[in-house]
Length: 252
Image (cartoon, rainbow, N blue to C red; front, side, top):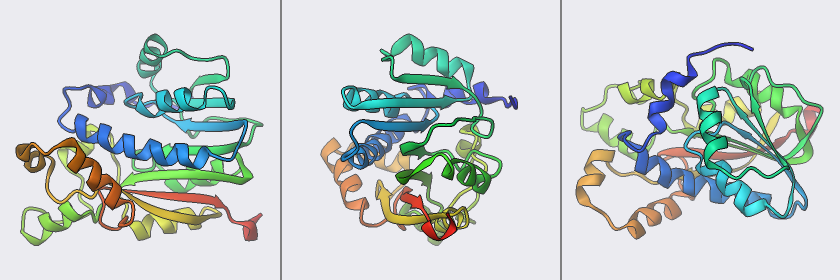
């Protein structure tokens, strides 16, 4: 197994992290889309890339407990994997695998793959997409979410002179282990060049101001939820982009 200092980023998943509440809001929005896509497959086989805040795998386990054929969760951090085992009820159909995404091998194919906030971390996004395309059932779906370089609040920052480059990584990005920013077009290009077709594009959290500015407004949670709901229709402006990808039949 390749070794990376993944455990050095685990503090970014703690409640004390500056963006914790915002990340939870976005993950709630994201996992709803994942669960919506799981409808119609019964039983369903799911592959998750990483545990992170635990929000997504716990919601998937809870929602699909009675319909789950198999649920494989890949995680490169031994510490995060241990924390999940300690805090979650793990049914027999769930297989927790300590591995780097690049190293995982399986003979199984999955109905759903959820790759939420992964591609900004890996060394070679296209290599990961091409690898896991082979593990997707012919009628399966891969859900891919990434932070958006061209989100509304970053565009405002650029226009007002507080930001010099939409694709520049901040200190907080580095703390999270980010290696790059995508925008809508570059994400679509990466997906399509990997032998996948984009079936749908959605936005996660229409964020008009910085995290600190929004926090100072003490907005009702219903307003923040509205930003998430409205944002689904405006991926090019949202804080994160979600694409639903399927196998491109012309490359099979």
